[in-house]
Image (cartoon, rainbow, N blue to C red):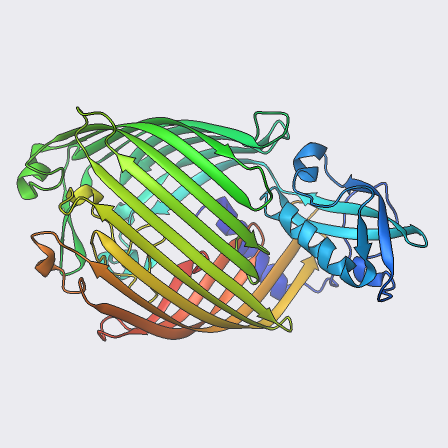
Amino acid sequence: MIHTRLLLVCLAFVLQFTSLSAFSQSTSGKTNHKNIPKAAEVPLLVGDSLVIRNIFVDCHKRTKDRIIVRELAISSGDKIAREQLKTVLDQEANKVFNTGLFVKVDAVADEFEKGIIDVVIVVREQWYLFPIPLIDFADRNINEWIKQHNASLDRLEYGMYFQQKNFRGRNEDLILTVQLGFTKRVALDYKVPYINKKQTIGMDVGVSYNENKNLAYATDSNKLNFLDSDRRLRSRFQAGIGFTKRSKYYSRHSVSMRYHENNIADTIARLNENYYLNGRKHQRFLSLEYNFTYDHRDRAPYPLKGEYLALKVLKQGILPSDDLNSAVLTAHLAKFWAYKDRLYWSTSLLGKLSLPRQQPYSELRGLGYNNFVMRGFDQFVIEGQHLAIHKTTVKVKLFNSEKKINFLNIDQFNLVPLAAYFKVFADYGFVQNTSPNAERNTFGNQWLMSYGAGIDFVTYYNFVARFEYVKNNFGQFDGFFFNLGADF
């Protein structure tokens, strides 16, 4: 999404390299705890234990204490070995940072007297109200938009995106989207992370409507065929409710039910009678979805250490009268290693199984959609019922710094972090397509491979820019690629 945040990020890059201001190594903001030493500054005596007397939270104006404390595994009275203190505090800071509520989080210790410490969680809150001018690509990624559609402005989506993050200081999100352009869309979502006193159960409700006058109705030679019209070609309405359960720090369960009502024009049904199958022009059904996530990464937007597991079971078509009957199982497993704070290695495995054997074209999603992507195949879609992708990346940290922009007197923006990583990578994948027209897409039902090198830039508000040179085993569209967002 290209919007106001992207403009701010571009400004941050310029300031990072041109500002003559000194680096700021301290956490700014108003605090009641002065001269608190960093965890690394506490003398580390092997075999000595420290007892936590109190835990404080500083520098937050909006967020409720309980939302922050909910993330902590430590409490008053706990004992920590001195040699483990920095590791424990870094882990607790990362967990608070991964709530997505803060620009910066530090966990520091103040030794009150010998063997007794106070722990202070020092946070810098984000800017939570975003009335954002929305500009987005209708295509799956920026490379497809530039190389296949010549960066046509007609394929942009624009509008306004109103997000009130951390609504009422309770990590709630209230989001209104009004979108025009390639896809017209109106959506309202309200997400409440906790609705019970134990802060273990959350809820979200949402409703959306969108329509298109330009629509991909088929796939040929691994590329989407579009039809442009002066009238509506497709409309989709969706409403649903979901619940989450988070009894532990790293695990989350969620279940949701949604009502779907979809319609296509006669022209689409004639061009592809399998769009909804059997020439159908209307689709109404209920869906039930279950997700399990185990997320023990250091920093979720750009992880360097930890592990991740996500499982999803989706059943579309609950009632006998529903117009769609399908089941999908997806899994994502990843592991990240750090070596001496400069060298990093990650590996991940993604998989999908779906039934039945023949599915509507609208549901036949394989490689190139959502998180199922391979570097080097940005411009292609490889549709199928089943797929597997394996990714391996080795990174070297080039630099990781923070700079205080003194003349920018806005706490949420004047501390600019910027890191860069050089990487080499290799991806492997396979997509199985059992549809009648599978032979029209040559990359299906055979092994796929890509490899290359690149540089990632990571800055504030979880913004990641990737510059990569990639080759694939088909020798098509090798070269340089630019992408937004982590490749995980």
